[in-house]
Image (cartoon, rainbow, N blue to C red; front, side, top):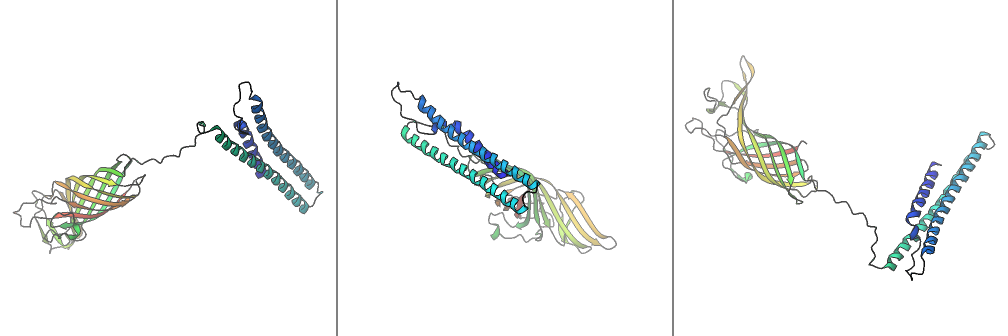
Length: 363
């Protein structure tokens, strides 16, 4: 009953709303005649025809609903008075539902036929009036998808640090540094940055900038960095025999500003991307950490802070290939990580950092 009533109400609403809007479109208007020929009777006839059709179909809907309601009320009374069996009542209810549905479908078919006739009349009207007449009905313009203009976020960088004999953009074919300062494979690069990315107009090019902190860690394995007590610099690197050395590393921290040009054709800036650019930074300080086991003392962790004759500035180039929030990249430092006096017993380091890293945008 609810479905039939909903369909009937919908048909009635459609007919009621269509009648005043399409009143003058029921039939093509006659071509203008002499001024003495009034057009009012034709317009009135057209209006009456449209209104009468809508009223007739609305009346038929109301009659169908009214008859169905009366029959259902009578059936309910028979059920309450037990004048009809349960099987007969179900059969009678199904007959009433089917008949109402057939009547509503017939009215719906009449409405569809009427709409088809109106559409044909409008097409004939356009042909009769010619190409010079412009109707005030314009199709809705499709919405243009907006380009994402900016992308901001915080980026986490984690990578592996390698020492090369000379700076190069071809890291794969470069010679590794093999002196006393050569660190083990556990050396790493870690960074965290706040980035700002802006699209250049409506092009796939973006300008990316940011600022953040980078730490370059050098793992010396079983070798110790001896630190003179007066100046806090690195004096020498030597094997340790007196204690059981577990870990010996040095981390130099820098405040860095990366700048790059990004190619990302995605409208939302979340597709495949490639970026290339450079970075520059200034030293914040360094931390040496030694973990060893000594007889009578057990496990000992020794941490020393200082500049360790680290390079005051860091700078270089980097490139990244990414998708959505993730990238893979390489970077090459063009500054020597340490500047130490040549008179020291340990050979001054002549190497350069190269890193392979991955990043993820946290938000």
